[in-house]
Amino acid sequence: MSTPSIYGLTLEQLTAWLGERGHKKGRAQQVWDWLYRKRVTDFAAMEDVNAELRRVLEEHYAIQTLEEHVKQQSSDGTVKFLFKLTDGNLIETVLMRHKFGLSVCVTTQVGCNIGCSFCASGLLKKSRDLTSGEIVEQIMKVQLHLDAAGLGERVSHIVVMGIGEPFDNYEHMSNFIRVVKDHKGLAIGPRHITVSTSGLAKKIREFADSDLGVNLAISLHAPNNELRTKIMVINKAIPIETLMDAINYYLDRTNRRITLEYIMLRDVNDQKEHALELAQLIGEGKLKQLANVNLIPYNPVDEHSQYQRPDQETIRGFYDTLKKQGVSVSVRLEHGVDIDAACGQLRSKQIRAEKDRLGVG
Image 1 (cartoon, one colour):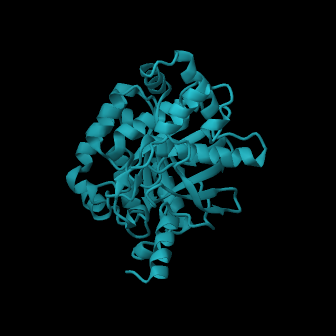
Image 2: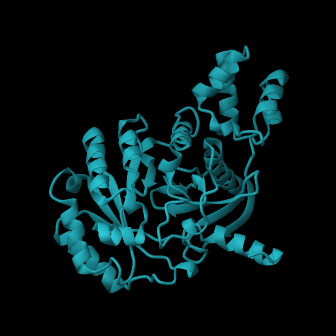
Image 3: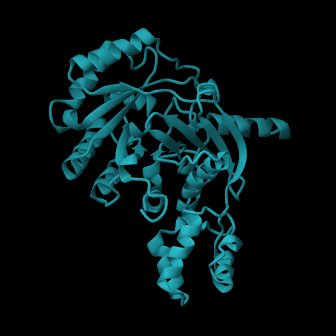
């Protein structure tokens, strides 16, 4: 079994771990500074940490467990990384440039079992969860990429929307958030972190009761059970009524804004009647006050050729219909359209290429 990543420990966990081995509390803060402020990638570089402690850390933990396998850079500044894990699996991480800062989309699982019929991430079924350390290290790798450019830029926002269902890896996802928002480390504010779920109702309730304090986005994609089940298998187990109950529980507990993600598929869920039905689903209560519908024009994937992208007129009509119903709505600004834009696309392409090279099916 490979050595676990030290990035998987919160400052409190690191302090407790060192304390059990007889080290003073201040030592944990020293190590933490080297990891997140000075961003060293080797325990030997921690100059003011005594040799015995460095030896103990190196014996039990690793700093680098992700290897950069492929890096694609878009004309709009988006950078897509394909990382290889110690077990040989591949994951994707994306750096996106916005007017408000630099955002990183992280992956939480190797593959995905949710089974959305339009999604490149689910082309390869889940083989395992990522550890919290592997998720944190995605941020660190991107930050080191920025550091190398020498422009003084830093990761300011995080979206947990990469490959996998974050709430299906709830414990590691939660620990990851506690690490990256720690004010003594990366200090990424909780309001700058968004977690997206396909609708695991029980976990939405647990999330509402947690102290994480970060934003929530729901992958809705359809306004009724029949259509949602057609494109999202999870709706069979967790129908819209159950999901909406969980969303309302979250809103009552947190009183925080929520994003409803709606991927637009030509002639499937993009008609005026769908927009009206979506407005009716949102209703007139707290959800309407706090929700923003984020329209996402579909990025075509070869393996899902049954779906196409709507034209601009259709997208605008859907947007206008929601607006007229008083629903807060936006259209997602696209990033990296010239570099395997769909999440999971680069990974699946690389795996197919490797299979072709080896002559396996």
